[in-house]
Image 1 (cartoon, rainbow, N blue to C red):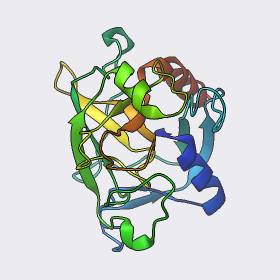
Image 2: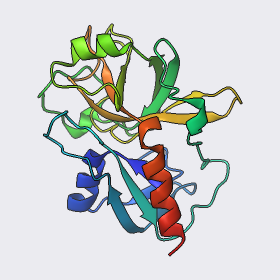
Image 3: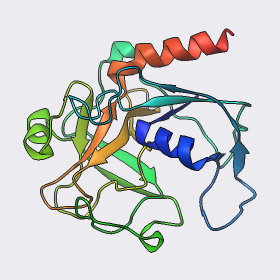
Length: 217
Protein backbone atom coordinates (compact mmCIF):
# COMPACT_ATOMS: atom_id res chain seq x y z
CA UNK A 1 0.00 0.00 0.00
CA UNK A 2 0.96 3.63 -0.42
CA UNK A 3 0.59 6.32 2.24
CA UNK A 4 -0.94 9.62 1.10
CA UNK A 5 -2.28 12.73 2.72
CA UNK A 6 -6.01 13.26 2.46
CA UNK A 7 -5.36 16.29 0.25
CA UNK A 8 -3.90 13.91 -2.31
CA UNK A 9 -6.84 11.60 -1.81
CA UNK A 10 -9.23 14.38 -2.82
CA UNK A 11 -7.18 14.95 -5.97
CA UNK A 12 -7.23 11.22 -6.72
CA UNK A 13 -11.01 11.10 -6.39
CA UNK A 14 -11.89 14.21 -8.37
CA UNK A 15 -9.16 14.35 -10.99
CA UNK A 16 -8.61 10.61 -11.58
CA UNK A 17 -4.91 10.69 -10.75
CA UNK A 18 -2.96 7.56 -11.60
CA UNK A 19 -0.42 5.91 -9.33
CA UNK A 20 2.96 5.91 -11.05
CA UNK A 21 6.18 4.28 -9.89
CA UNK A 22 9.64 4.94 -11.28
CA UNK A 23 8.71 8.31 -12.77
CA UNK A 24 11.29 11.12 -12.81
CA UNK A 25 10.41 13.57 -15.60
CA UNK A 26 6.67 14.20 -15.76
CA UNK A 27 6.89 15.57 -19.32
CA UNK A 28 8.47 12.37 -20.70
CA UNK A 29 7.02 8.87 -20.94
CA UNK A 30 10.01 7.07 -19.43
CA UNK A 31 10.70 3.35 -19.81
CA UNK A 32 11.31 3.13 -16.03
CA UNK A 33 7.81 4.24 -15.03
CA UNK A 34 4.93 1.93 -14.15
CA UNK A 35 1.24 2.89 -14.06
CA UNK A 36 -0.77 0.91 -11.50
CA UNK A 37 -4.59 1.03 -11.25
CA UNK A 38 -6.11 1.65 -7.82
CA UNK A 39 -8.18 -1.01 -6.09
CA UNK A 40 -9.31 0.78 -2.92
CA UNK A 41 -8.65 3.88 -0.83
CA UNK A 42 -8.75 4.04 2.98
CA UNK A 43 -9.04 7.45 4.66
CA UNK A 44 -8.08 7.66 8.31
CA UNK A 45 -11.39 7.81 10.26
CA UNK A 46 -10.29 10.85 12.30
CA UNK A 47 -9.53 13.05 9.31
CA UNK A 48 -11.42 16.36 9.25
CA UNK A 49 -9.90 18.77 6.71
CA UNK A 50 -11.21 21.89 8.45
CA UNK A 51 -11.93 20.44 11.87
CA UNK A 52 -10.14 20.80 15.18
CA UNK A 53 -7.27 20.24 15.43
CA UNK A 54 -6.53 21.30 11.87
CA UNK A 55 -5.70 18.42 9.50
CA UNK A 56 -5.50 15.87 12.32
CA UNK A 57 -5.21 12.34 10.93
CA UNK A 58 -4.16 13.68 7.53
CA UNK A 59 -3.28 10.42 5.80
CA UNK A 60 -4.82 7.70 3.69
CA UNK A 61 -3.80 4.29 2.37
CA UNK A 62 -4.11 3.26 -1.26
CA UNK A 63 -4.33 -0.42 -2.16
CA UNK A 64 -3.00 -1.16 -5.63
CA UNK A 65 -4.58 -3.69 -7.98
CA UNK A 66 -1.22 -5.35 -8.68
CA UNK A 67 2.29 -5.47 -7.27
CA UNK A 68 4.88 -2.88 -8.24
CA UNK A 69 7.98 -4.26 -9.92
CA UNK A 70 11.06 -3.27 -7.93
CA UNK A 71 14.32 -2.37 -9.67
CA UNK A 72 16.91 0.31 -10.19
CA UNK A 73 14.30 3.10 -10.35
CA UNK A 74 11.70 1.74 -7.92
CA UNK A 75 12.57 0.94 -4.31
CA UNK A 76 10.68 0.64 -1.03
CA UNK A 77 11.07 2.69 2.14
CA UNK A 78 10.54 1.14 5.57
CA UNK A 79 7.87 1.91 8.13
CA UNK A 80 9.40 2.61 11.55
CA UNK A 81 9.24 0.01 14.29
CA UNK A 82 6.83 0.99 17.04
CA UNK A 83 9.40 -0.05 19.66
CA UNK A 84 11.85 2.58 18.35
CA UNK A 85 9.57 5.40 19.38
CA UNK A 86 8.82 8.41 17.21
CA UNK A 87 11.88 9.15 15.07
CA UNK A 88 10.66 12.67 14.23
CA UNK A 89 13.12 14.08 16.76
CA UNK A 90 13.90 17.83 16.96
CA UNK A 91 17.22 18.82 15.36
CA UNK A 92 17.47 15.55 13.42
CA UNK A 93 17.60 16.04 9.66
CA UNK A 94 15.31 14.41 7.13
CA UNK A 95 14.74 14.47 3.38
CA UNK A 96 11.58 15.00 1.37
CA UNK A 97 11.06 14.67 -2.40
CA UNK A 98 8.36 15.71 -4.86
CA UNK A 99 7.29 17.55 -8.00
CA UNK A 100 5.84 20.59 -6.25
CA UNK A 101 6.21 24.35 -6.70
CA UNK A 102 9.85 25.41 -6.92
CA UNK A 103 9.62 29.07 -5.85
CA UNK A 104 8.76 30.86 -2.59
CA UNK A 105 5.00 30.98 -2.22
CA UNK A 106 2.95 33.16 0.09
CA UNK A 107 -0.13 31.68 1.73
CA UNK A 108 -3.09 31.86 -0.65
CA UNK A 109 -0.94 32.87 -3.62
CA UNK A 110 -1.98 31.35 -6.92
CA UNK A 111 0.37 29.15 -8.90
CA UNK A 112 0.66 28.23 -12.56
CA UNK A 113 1.91 25.10 -14.30
CA UNK A 114 5.21 26.90 -14.91
CA UNK A 115 5.78 27.02 -11.13
CA UNK A 116 5.62 23.23 -10.77
CA UNK A 117 8.72 21.08 -11.25
CA UNK A 118 8.75 18.69 -14.20
CA UNK A 119 11.46 16.54 -12.60
CA UNK A 120 11.65 14.95 -9.15
CA UNK A 121 13.48 17.17 -6.66
CA UNK A 122 14.51 16.70 -3.05
CA UNK A 123 15.52 18.81 -0.06
CA UNK A 124 17.03 18.08 3.34
CA UNK A 125 16.42 20.10 6.51
CA UNK A 126 16.02 19.83 10.27
CA UNK A 127 12.98 18.87 12.33
CA UNK A 128 11.96 21.65 14.72
CA UNK A 129 10.75 21.59 18.31
CA UNK A 130 7.05 21.18 19.03
CA UNK A 131 6.91 24.54 20.76
CA UNK A 132 8.45 26.37 17.80
CA UNK A 133 6.03 24.62 15.43
CA UNK A 134 3.07 25.63 17.62
CA UNK A 135 4.27 29.24 17.83
CA UNK A 136 4.72 29.53 14.06
CA UNK A 137 1.68 27.59 12.83
CA UNK A 138 -0.90 30.38 13.11
CA UNK A 139 -3.67 27.78 13.40
CA UNK A 140 -4.58 25.02 15.85
CA UNK A 141 -1.82 22.43 15.61
CA UNK A 142 -1.68 19.00 17.25
CA UNK A 143 1.99 18.24 17.91
CA UNK A 144 1.20 14.65 18.93
CA UNK A 145 0.21 13.75 15.36
CA UNK A 146 2.27 16.24 13.33
CA UNK A 147 5.63 18.00 13.32
CA UNK A 148 7.27 20.81 11.38
CA UNK A 149 10.61 21.04 9.62
CA UNK A 150 12.54 23.44 7.40
CA UNK A 151 15.47 25.83 7.33
CA UNK A 152 13.41 28.87 8.43
CA UNK A 153 15.45 31.07 6.08
CA UNK A 154 13.22 30.79 3.05
CA UNK A 155 15.76 28.77 1.10
CA UNK A 156 14.45 25.21 1.29
CA UNK A 157 10.99 23.77 1.93
CA UNK A 158 8.35 21.39 0.66
CA UNK A 159 5.57 23.15 -1.22
CA UNK A 160 2.21 22.90 -2.95
CA UNK A 161 2.18 19.76 -5.09
CA UNK A 162 4.49 17.86 -2.73
CA UNK A 163 1.66 16.75 -0.43
CA UNK A 164 1.81 13.05 0.37
CA UNK A 165 5.56 12.86 -0.17
CA UNK A 166 7.56 10.87 2.36
CA UNK A 167 9.74 12.65 4.92
CA UNK A 168 12.52 10.10 5.48
CA UNK A 169 15.65 9.73 7.60
CA UNK A 170 18.09 6.95 8.35
CA UNK A 171 17.34 4.87 11.43
CA UNK A 172 19.90 3.18 13.66
CA UNK A 173 20.10 0.17 11.32
CA UNK A 174 21.01 2.54 8.44
CA UNK A 175 17.73 1.81 6.65
CA UNK A 176 15.71 4.68 5.24
CA UNK A 177 12.52 5.06 7.26
CA UNK A 178 9.46 7.21 6.53
CA UNK A 179 8.72 9.25 9.65
CA UNK A 180 6.26 11.76 8.18
CA UNK A 181 4.33 12.81 5.10
CA UNK A 182 3.97 16.30 3.64
CA UNK A 183 0.72 17.82 4.89
CA UNK A 184 0.44 21.63 4.80
CA UNK A 185 2.21 24.94 5.31
CA UNK A 186 1.77 28.71 5.58
CA UNK A 187 2.99 29.16 2.04
CA UNK A 188 6.38 27.75 1.07
CA UNK A 189 9.98 28.83 1.67
CA UNK A 190 8.93 31.84 3.74
CA UNK A 191 11.29 33.26 6.35
CA UNK A 192 10.51 32.08 9.90
CA UNK A 193 7.97 29.58 8.57
CA UNK A 194 8.12 25.80 8.27
CA UNK A 195 6.43 22.90 6.50
CA UNK A 196 4.08 20.66 8.50
CA UNK A 197 4.12 16.86 8.30
CA UNK A 198 1.83 14.10 9.54
CA UNK A 199 3.71 11.90 12.01
CA UNK A 200 3.79 8.23 11.03
CA UNK A 201 4.47 6.75 14.47
CA UNK A 202 1.04 7.53 16.06
CA UNK A 203 -0.71 5.84 13.12
CA UNK A 204 1.38 2.66 12.87
CA UNK A 205 -1.31 0.45 14.44
CA UNK A 206 -3.97 1.73 12.02
CA UNK A 207 -1.64 1.36 9.01
CA UNK A 208 -0.64 -2.20 9.88
CA UNK A 209 -4.15 -3.31 10.89
CA UNK A 210 -5.60 -1.95 7.65
CA UNK A 211 -2.92 -3.64 5.56
CA UNK A 212 -3.28 -6.98 7.38
CA UNK A 213 -7.07 -6.94 7.11
CA UNK A 214 -6.97 -6.24 3.39
CA UNK A 215 -4.22 -8.75 2.66
CA UNK A 216 -6.31 -11.40 4.40
CA UNK A 217 -9.34 -10.90 2.20
